[in-house]
Length: 421
Image (cartoon, rainbow, N blue to C red; front, side, top):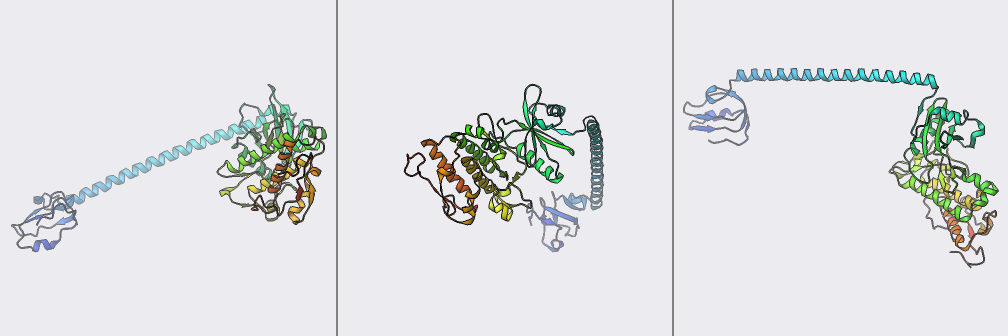
């Protein structure tokens, strides 16, 4: 009976010994195990080669069972010693690493404490050029009011001219509510250290301490859009072409925040005072103290009322729900403010009251600058239509739905076009 190379396992059945006519039993090259008892007839020949786990009579080429068990005990003992040695080595490494970490942290704390004693300030920087904390203090004379160039909801902005002629804007946070200040401070840092866009103000660094927190930006020379619109002489410099370009810059910055990131960034406080202008009237979006990441591109809920009255989207003020469309609504208000040179105010009522309001476009335009040319008329009408599309009371309303748009007569501004497109 040839049963070799059949991948047999387990003990050899004792029933084989009852086969009286059996001459040769070939069980080699299998995986048999256990003790082999020689109970076959004297004339029977049993082949058990290449069965590693079987023991028995040496005349069959097998290892005695007593020796096999002893070898197993030796093997288990060696394995135990090896595991114990490895465990001891692992514990030694962990202990050494822990000691080094504790020593390093103690030295670092001691170094920081000594630094605090000498400067009474812990500063963390992220600068292109190395700027010392003391240079900021000296340049602003410890944040004297004469260097203040603006005051916002989260802090005051100071002008600091450092050695070498570099000029920066220093935003010193108010210390009204430590928890809100801390959250706004870190929100602005997290956003501005990641974003890189030509229409978003650049953060150079920041300083954090329990008694003093400030951020360092590029100085945008002409100040906020709101201040330029309010002052008559400055507003006259903002012709219709410049105003259209400013709104395009703001729209590009918002598009970058909403769509160029895996997790959209919502500003939540878009208004004319948070839009800065440089000497070439290029616009920069600033003040990200209320910014928030919007996970999974869906709406989110806010437990704190944030934003500025007059610019807040209806769904945020009523349901405390914000999406990127909240920034879009605020942009619509800013667009109307740029066209009218003042907050649209009552012009927004038809969106909420669903009433008809007949208003001529010419009547709401800023009268302090020259009337628009024929080419500029088209841009102005487009800006107004885009603004009204942004101001829909329901965020999911289609942009071309005119149900909530006030009836503004798009008549000729220069008697050149019978009807604007």
